[in-house]
Image (tube, rainbow, N blue to C red; front, side, top):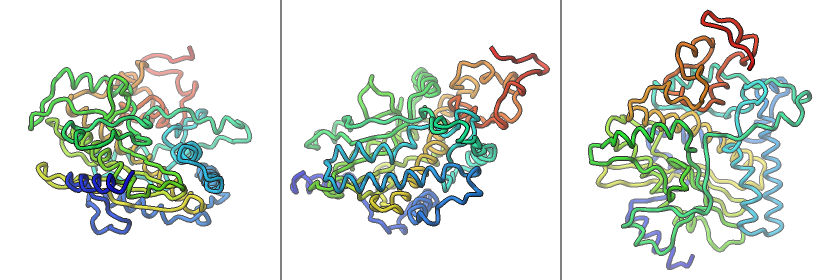
Length: 424
């Protein structure tokens, strides 16, 4: 990007109310997200020495040893990329799978369905009703205690996470008035969002049928910045832009290059608020922005402020570091873990709850499973310890199985007053 193009993009971003705030601007943080931002900055101070798992806690927090091993591997891979002078694509192919792996693997053990991972700092929700529900589920979650010596390599076969998906180098579609002012198409290196699962298919089909209209005349909200029908990613919440260590583009270039993508994603999340009856949105609009130049990484969060007629889009830098260093590599992995925790336990349930309110959908009809016992209250009540919380019943089957305590077994599924359950 030439200096002239950079200057033009930065000027256009200012005209659209997009600003980037440097690290240390905590006095300007929005009150709604202070707890979340403080958690990110706290994780950005963790050292490998203080994080090192104690042997006596190996079964209580089995994921700590693995996280530390991943951090060491990440630091080694980054140092190798730098010493070999790799280009942007090589950097991305080498380190991104390590850094973003939390979004692609399951968090429940395939054998006992207990947790094989938990965020170092768990997300705190501002919605008291949602927080009570989340805390109730957390109390039912126990750590996996399977002996890795017995199950061997299978202990690392965590399965594919069914909740999130991503797009790489795909064109973002802005509103027509903005597109005419941009000299180039915007194709972010990577965008993460919610996967279009069964519950979303049901809710969005119902919303479309009802033709819900908001107070300002808005109808069906925009779901994705990408072109349909290829669209399988909903309400994206994370943008990543990368450059190699030898690139002439610096962080200012990446910010200017991503500014309008961030704005568009925030607007897509805002669209949910335009539907009549959606009520307060506690978790969003919020978009995470990751950018890196070689081993140097920055983590930022973008929010919306101001009245509808004078919207501003503020991006707050929350952490920066070099993943060549073990401490920084560990910090980045823990921060990504927290963002994943926010997305899984905060953002996704909030989006589902908002759509449920809009469509007045009942929980049982939205269960993401074809198993009758999981969608019928009478039969579902047979299973003691099952979480029937209304705001989370529509999660995927794996999430529901994870909440069962103790793990479901043949012995527990034998004789009930309404009948008998046996292995098929």
